[in-house]
Length: 476
Image (tube, rainbow, N blue to C red; front, side):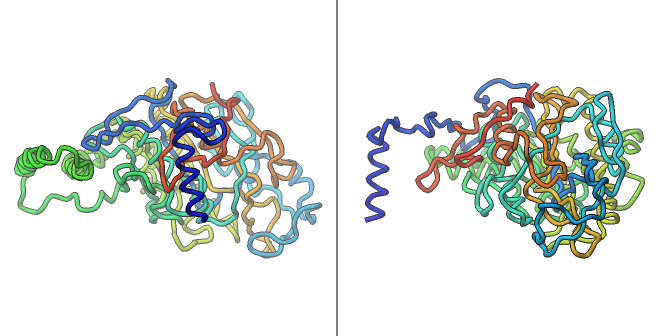
């Protein structure tokens, strides 16, 4: 009877007989499903409305960066340092809570805006006037895998398309010899949720992120030994003619067309990817600014990834996702920002890797004029507690308040939105959900988050599920 009722509801909906809904409408708005040519799935497509942002760079820091030790200044923590937290939980994600702890690094005013930023991130702090901070974010989970899923896909469960997949599905890309969506994983490996962070979910496979780094190219692209570049081009040209002739015999087979398009892109990538990964042509001043030759080996590798990110954006890649942190099995601050113990050491280690290269990337993009049409998103999956854990050296997970920031096309600069309470424990002013955060990013890319959908299992699915509101106050 349940299946029959579902079928009846579907039929009534199609005929416009369900309440006052019109056929095909979703929350009162007609879905917009882009027309994707399976023979060229990454062809550029128009946004729902015009906006400055044409590309997006997402910098994701797995493990949960402590907002109260970086961007969210809370003097009350210093005043109450060492005391038992009043009206705050006695037990959190990993066990009993300890005493309130002042920030492990001093905060100082930065830029003309006077934004208070921790000395942990001096290079990013110097760019405070370029950032638009959101201090009132909150999420649905305090577990890393689900938190990463939620931030990237809008769902805590697996199997849903990532933000990058939605954007490339909607907009395609401006380049023909590189993927529309590239995921640059941390030198140490994948983040906790792995490929789900840049997966296509139930969208066509052509919209998943292609993963490679400045050191490791995509799999299976190396030319066989003894085959020259000219021979390779000739072979690809012959295959293209044969594939085109085969496709003429089956003009309505979209799966065949998509498969051919995928192989042809791979063939073009055999030429383009080695060129884009070759950083030797970058001037010494760029390597010095990014820090590819100073500091730890991890920092050098991450700095090279930052240069790669800029080069990909310059070539027209629509979405570049840059990871700073890894480890699908944990790491406790060693391979990511998850600092349950000795946060003074572990956060400092991650900051040494992330700070200078990331700041150099943003400064370089600004100098080249790239921030006029590129949106930058810096984010993490949740925050950390204002008090220590029972071990007295680390901060536990805090899903109730954390900070992320925007920069570049379409957003206000030198601006802070929202507020957590005096302890940084809970968002209290202009509370912003992850749904709102993702709705705002899509809006900045010229996409209506309520109308960009894909029909899946009887539902008009979208990145923000049935939630989310654009945070208009952060728009320039």
